[in-house]
Length: 115
Image (cartoon, rainbow, N blue to C red):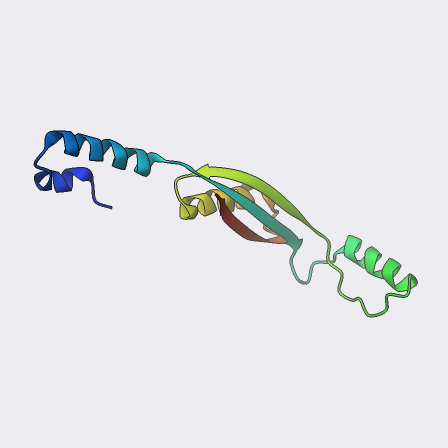
C-alpha cells in the first residue's frame, strides 16, 4: 500500500495535502467488525460416544435412515481487526491454542464482516 508521502509532489496546495493525509490515515487505521463461527468435531476414526448414544436413541424411535451421528460444538465470537486476513489468523490461532484439542478434534472456521 502506498503512503500519502509518495504523492506529495502531486499536491500543489499544502491544505489539500494535509486534508488528504488525515483522511487516508483515518481509513488505514479504521477497524472492522467480524463475526466468526468455529465448528469443532472429533476427527474421523475417533469414537464419538455421544454421537453413538444419540444414534442408538434415534433408531429406538424408528429413525432407521439416520446414520453416522457426530456431536461437536460451535463457538461464535466477534473480532475487531483491520482486515479479514488478520482476523482469520487471530481466530485460527485461538482455535489451535484453546478452542479445539487438535490431537483428537478438527475445526472449521467461518468468518464474515459485520456491516
